[in-house]
Length: 117
Image 1 (cartoon, helix red, strand yellow):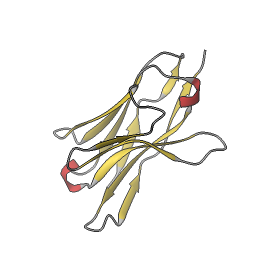
Image 2: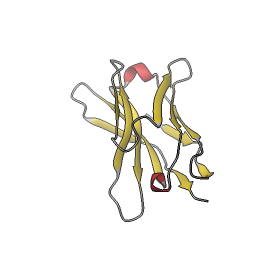
Image 3: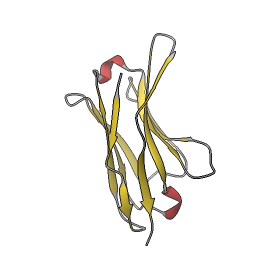
Image 4: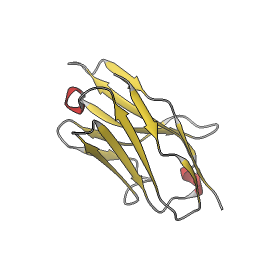
């Protein structure tokens, strides 16, 4: 499974960005797909993910501001980020999981999101 992330950039506080993750296989083959981020000097953390049953999870810090969605026809997952804050600045990574026992993990290349005035 290959993941191609795009959509990062520089945005002012309060602005919006939409990240895209294009997947090389059908989203139906995955247990879950989502986004992690890693800021300088910090550990990588889950931002949001969506599972095959439709359940979504969000980090507390982004609830109400970020929204994850999927387009099964395009094999693409999106992360709509609104009301961005400087603390959202990080490299964002697309992640997917597959396998009967959730044993396979896949990572896309990171995309930089910088929130600054």
